[in-house]
Length: 483
Image (cartoon, rainbow, N blue to C red; front, side):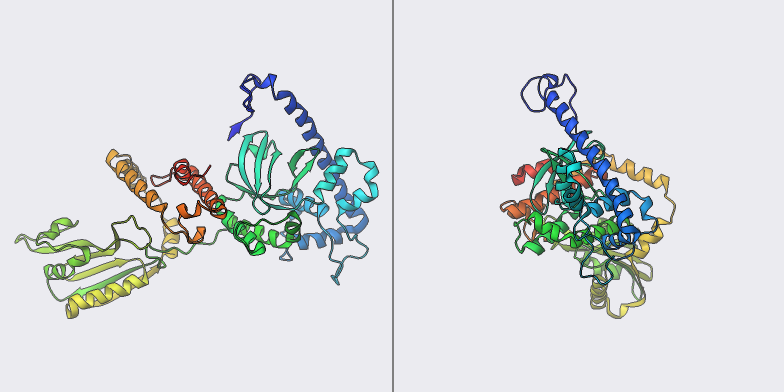
């Protein structure tokens, strides 16, 4: 996030001169215009609200609230919230028109927005900047903008996802907290060449929702790279607010996602317990192929191997694996579960119902009557994670995990894994890219747009929860030929 230059800093315009000798004066002039616009907003929006209450009463405002929240119930005490003052009220004065065909319509209310009505009846009372402000506000739609650049304390560069318009807004407060890559649901008002946001929704939307907004646009344009007109966006006022409130609900009160394993199966942690009628060594000999082992000394390859004094196998734990992975082409193999043999018991741990059925067939085929299934316990992953949240953290275990991750050989292993993963990612078909690979998507305008959104999501996540597998986003951009 860039900062505003100091007086003696090089001017950001690239002239090579000091800021005070170049663009500072122009910025001082734009500061004056920006203050005029904010003053117009600060005077006119509350005044129009009070006029509406005086002339048309609380019932009119109530009808607007019902429509604004899509007849889904007005939140309790909403008039005490920022959402009311900074989001609803501008929409109410700039856009709301009570439906003339509604049988419950408030009597004697205008057939145009309060802002349009005020300009028509009282335009001679307005200054030039106030007149231009209200005219622009009453015709500028609420839409979704992606934040492309920020100068903290001064301005935000925005890209309208629905119309394709690029605009720079003067903004002091939001520019200090809103990061590049985020999305805003807001209205941009422009007067005398100066643009500000007026009526911005309170939620700073994470970039993972960018593709949902692109899907919305495609649904109404019928084409992947075609943009909506501002007039079309205004006509979709209901649908856009419905999408925003859906996103808001999901971000503030997220539903638990459906988790799946590397084969795409829904996660169900399952434990199968068998009683054995033969020796552990016999069981191991017949099951070791499931782990890809075939040597006589294969027990040395596995952890937790226990022998008796005579050198006979008593217990062993081995992985159940298969070669490759259908979703991750860079993987040499996939672990499907673990098999623990001990005494007269065999226990298998898998993470899906499909793998559970498959291992039951394998054991029946390889062990027959020598293994009797006694118990099968299946727990949905959501239940286990919920239970885990209530368990106290183990600081010793956390410290040991951190110590392990700091070891140079572990870090080097993770670096190599990450490198292989992101190399393969470039040629992996992704549903979010229309089942194209990143390389394929980079060749088309709509593909590049979706790639930019995806990479913004990667950067957002890596900044907030960095880990060894986080991608080098600038390097991916360079490899894909993206700016």
